[in-house]
Length: 240
Image (cartoon, rainbow, N blue to C red; front, side, top):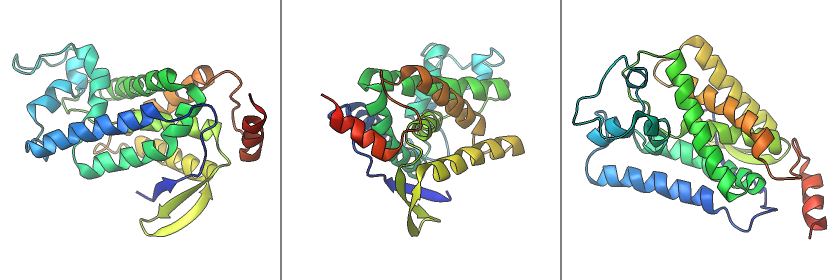
């Protein structure tokens, strides 16, 4: 990872507390800890990950799960896969991005719409992955598509906010969100075009596109796009 975000200093303006963002982080972390405690994480997928992960070939009826694994409707896996991670670093990367950027997107959308947004971006990522790799029998796991949607929303809502990041994992810099997030989004599409098969950049791309489109319709009434930080602060101060 070229940069690691850890703080944006972008205060909440419309909600008192980011319950959904922290609830999602807690749920993702507790699920991973459960598998870690039971020895189910690692190079080989557990039965639970196969059952609740997303498998394009199964969704497209090119393959059928054995009876022991076919325990839930295939439609559920378009979302459930986003709550499972392969290892600690996979989890940590997604949760850091959600921690830094999720609260302000939740602030702009409201609690219920942000939860809906997160789930829809996850589903869009699975659909994109399914479309581009229709016969793949590999199991898709992780919240990356949903988090990619959050990144797209933050870029549209707060491009001028400055974010503290560690560049190359060691150099702390405070840089504008538009520079960081536009670079990150561009990297996802570049890797998709190059055909990297180890990471599902198709899922990331689907989440990004869904996040951008959903931001247009799910943000709260009066929430501006591409707001200047000073303008947003003035708006909040002048409110009821």
